[in-house]
Length: 129
Image (tube, rainbow, N blue to C red; front, side):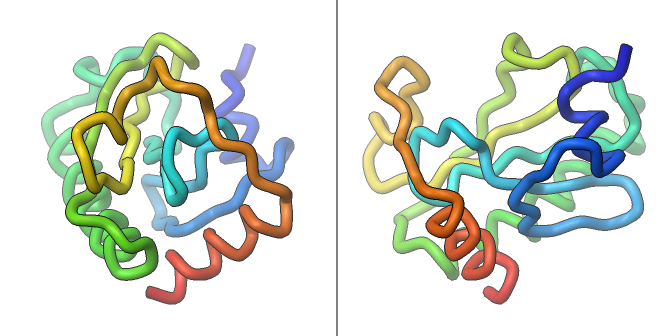
């Protein structure tokens, strides 16, 4: 059975895309811990991030670097943090989170709520950066 993320890649479930290429997709997290919180996934379904082959692991990090630059330009922050957790969805993914203080990347804190219009505006700002 395809994962939630594979269904997003297939276009079965909508998302707020911020960047995409042939191999990877970046889209806003629907339960963000910070404005601009973005998920990076390989389009090929692999459960565990560190099971990605070396070429894909290298490429996803270079892709994430591009996305992080866009996030930093679009969302006022000191840095863009990265987290690989992998417990939420059985599809390799990384979180890019705009940071101003260390606690900005605390996944235990309450999630932010945005309207679909606000998500669209945030995604547009990152895409255009």
